[in-house]
Amino acid sequence: MALFSSPPSSLCVLRLSAIGDACNTCAMVQAIQRQWPTTKITWIMGKAEAQLLGDLPGVRVITFDKKQGWKGYTQLWQQLRGERFDALLHLQTALRASIVSLGIRAKYRLGFDKTRSSDLQNWFINTPVISPDSPHVLDGFMAFAQTIGIEDSNPRWELELSQADQDWAKQHSDSAPILVIVPAASKAFKNWTADGYAKVAEHAVARGMKVILAGSPAEVEIQLAKQVCKLSSVPLTNLVGKSSLKQMLALLAEAKLVIAPDTGPAHMAVATNTPVIGLYAHHNPKRTGPYRYLNYVVSAYQEAIEAETGKPLSQLSWRSRVKDPDAMQRIPAEAVITMLDKALSDFHTLKETQ
Image (cartoon, rainbow, N blue to C red; front, side):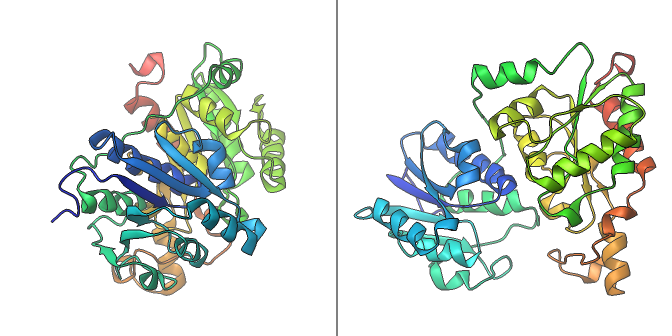
């Protein structure tokens, strides 16, 4: 039975990071807003996440800066002083998030059940949310919405972009359909090979696409993008490190297709309804892959986890992670090229495939 039979007055959502998880949380928040437009929603998120989602319509965003240490906690608690919410949706098992929750007063404190909980989160909640059959992170978040009484939990996103951000993205587009490749994740072991990206980019250009590389200013991303450009026999537009998160969101919205490893921009693309080819080896893509486009994931996860553990995937937890730092090298360029051709056909991206 749902916790609320009528719209609650106020809810607090606690999900600090990371970008991809924040995008998935956004779908849950907007599902709540569609059914209960009068409910006041406060979302506590990290600084980087606030750069992307801090202006969500109808949502009061409070930023938590973990780099401030204890001061970050006390400043946040001061902002919430005297407030009491009808429910706290505690969507992050990390201990720092649970410490944040100590300053949030709420009648119901929802958290993950034992299937998904970790880091002692159960100490900080009073209402465990029953895990859905699907292991995907977003389905786990949507279970929170269902528990409080939301009937339509089909994920949909409505993200607003400023005219300036849209103009920035449009200046990099032309008549050719755009393929955005986000070569790198924040953790280098999640990255595919520069040679692989170059071969895929060459194939995309041969098919009539314009290829743009995108990413953050992190040195690992900048260096990988430079390698890809150097190895490619065709010219690529390298925008890695040259955009804000909002500009990147606009660029992903402008694209016809995105290729990315297990990284935030893959989920940003999903939020703009742009098809994504996800490249996975370390995490189970059924749990963390780009929602709606799981059938377009190129994965070496099963091969790598079975080689590492000596057990069939069916005997392993869906949370199992591959530790081999070279696991992504198991993905052959030919497999990604084949998936690219399939996506171009399925989504009628090119004139000759229509």
